[in-house]
Amino acid sequence: MLKNTQNLLDIMSRLRDPENGCAWDVEQDFYSLIPYTIEEAYEVADAIERNDLDDLRSELGDLLLQVVFHARIAEERDLFNFEDVAEGISEKMVRRHPHVFSDAVFNSDEERKQAWEQAKALERQGKVRSAEPDSVLAGVAVNLPALVQCEKIQNRAASHGFDWPEVLPVFDKVMEELEEVKEAWQSGDQVHIQEEVGDLLLVAVNLARHLKVNPEIALRESTKKFSKRFNYIEQQVEASGRNLRDCELAELDAFWNEAKVALKNKDN
Image 1 (cartoon, one colour):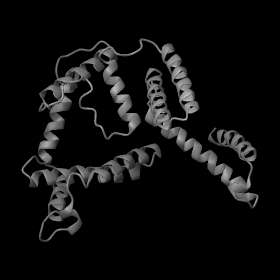
Image 2 (cartoon, rainbow, N blue to C red):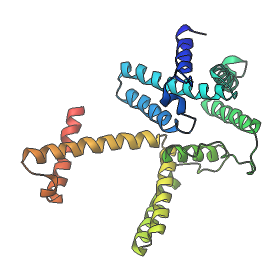
Image 3 (cartoon, rainbow, N blue to C red):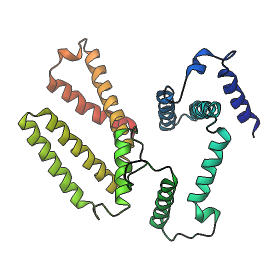
Image 4 (cartoon, rainbow, N blue to C red):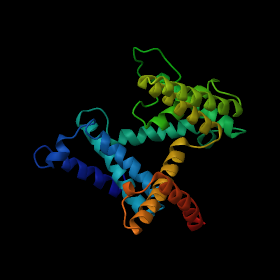
């Protein structure tokens, strides 16, 4: 094992020592670490989006620490250890890439994708079966961000033939769902409104899939764009010696249109 990897494992072992370790580290378990593991994954993504490669190295280390932390807890319970984790993912990557590690030949990206999904399906079949009936949707983590989970489930269904063959019907479905949201709003039934908004978001993810757009990334980018434009509005209002609530919506909307032009020119 590499020196620095072993050093990290030794550090975690000491931190988890019941007598001489860190009290906080000792009291953690799989469940208590969930928010930290998720947070570190998002911080890796943030460093990549900011193209801060020094920070990326640091954040990848933080994420690796979470892997080591979970593996150490598992080892203490005689479940598995870090070596087992590394061995498992190594075997999985070899198994899922027969065109690299054996003599399989794929003539297109679609063939490669189908083989990948078939390999994943076989892996799911090999896991311990639950009391629930088998489903092609089984194995998609329920605590993923909603957009990510929705896309994965739709991709899984599409790989088994449940999908529109082209994008135009999806546009029609978006408009249909939007109209149903309006009808629900007019009814005043909040439960029904929530249901229809959810359906609209789901079909929007489907549209993104057909347009080969990652919906999670698209929404993150649009949210960042919204924040930049809103910050521009705040700056203009502050320069006038007022607060946002002192301004009419029409004036704020005019600043918004200014922001669209000013920030676009700045980015160019």
